[in-house]
Image (tube, rainbow, N blue to C red; front, side, top):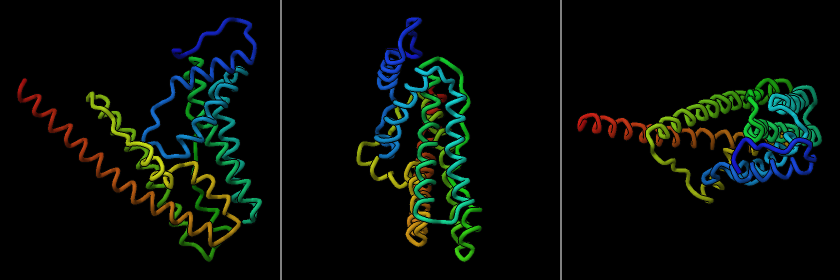
Length: 243
């Protein structure tokens, strides 16, 4: 079933939901090499949410707004409420739900043919560490480095994929094992890590571990992408020389 989906006027909500969900499942992006939580949990949940939102007639921008609301709620609790086991659970859940709706807005756009602006998504708030754990000032530095590395790596990955796609080369994504290896780099894991926020040391250790993995993964990914693009440049020069 091609996207966008065109339905008969007056169709029931159940019909719209089922049709949208099936269309989105058929058009799902390849999952090979995608971090495990995003691949097997967030994508499926976001697909159901997107189908429901589209069946209700909600616009992609409204779905993005819901994402921002949940993300903002999580960040407000993170900053305003002292670290406890229950506040951490609220933060982790709110960020994870915001991430899910952030993934759903684009699917609503594709299945309905509506235009959409991508909702803003914020993963890290360094100020929260300084408010409630001033003795752990180093964790604020970890958060800032973490945010800088993941943002830069994400944007460079998108740009490199566009270059490879434009050159007509096949993307190499890896298999299921790669999805599990990349699990610590999954945004969903980062969201749920805040469920440990009220536990103090366990959160600090786990969050620092995720940051360290992100730095290592970014270093390897950038090096690999650099080699790929150098190979594309060399192939292009050879092609120009034969022309």
